Length: 60
Image 1 (cartoon, rainbow, N blue to C red):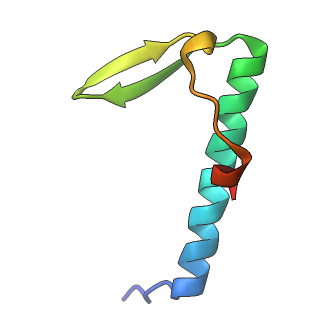
Image 2 (cartoon, rainbow, N blue to C red):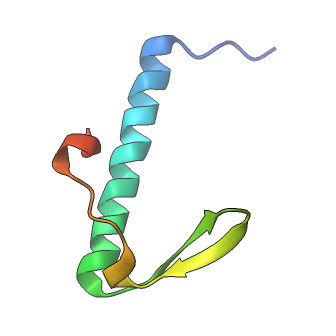
C-alpha cells in the first residue's frame, strides 16, 4: 500500500518542479530555442520570443 505524501513534502516537491520549469523556460528564451506546449487541446510551438517572461515572484 502506498503511504500518502505529507503536505510539507508535497509542497516542497511542487515548489521544486515550478522552479525547474521556470529555469528551463528562461534557458530556452536566452538560447533562442522554441518550446512546445499543450494549449486548447492542441500542441503549440512557441518561438523563444513568444515564451512569456516569468517574474521572479512566480519562481519560488
